[in-house]
Amino acid sequence: MVVICRVYDEPKDGYRVLVDRLWPRGVKKSSLQLDEWLRDLAPSDELRRWYGHDIGKWEEFRRRYQEELLSRDHSQVLERLRQKARDGRLVLLTSTRDVEHSNAEVLRELLEGES
Image (cartoon, rainbow, N blue to C red; front, side):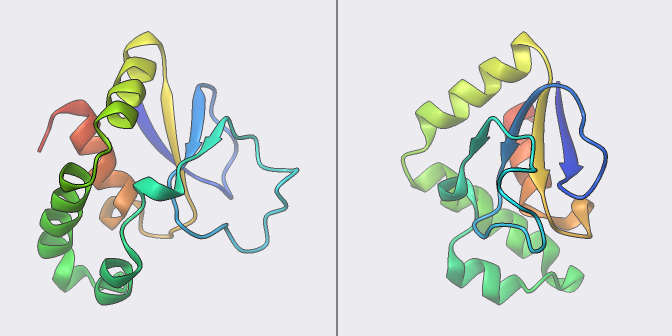
């Protein structure tokens, strides 16, 4: 099972992975319950800046980010995360306000085989 949680929300049990490239504002590293920070799985700076959380660009962002994930050699990391999800709950952490239109959602879809 893969769930998405904002870093500012009440923590959910599971293997907790921060998937943002930048550390969340206002959050101390010592206070975030976190198992791993996989900033390399986040969208490239160019893609992140282009998207700018403009919902009108969502479908194109989704396509480009999936392409980035599959074109970079992340297969081992993605498979390890899939295994964590099979073994229990995988919690993808993000600081974005719009979780439904975020890189965490694209990653969740990819890990669960929805895309």
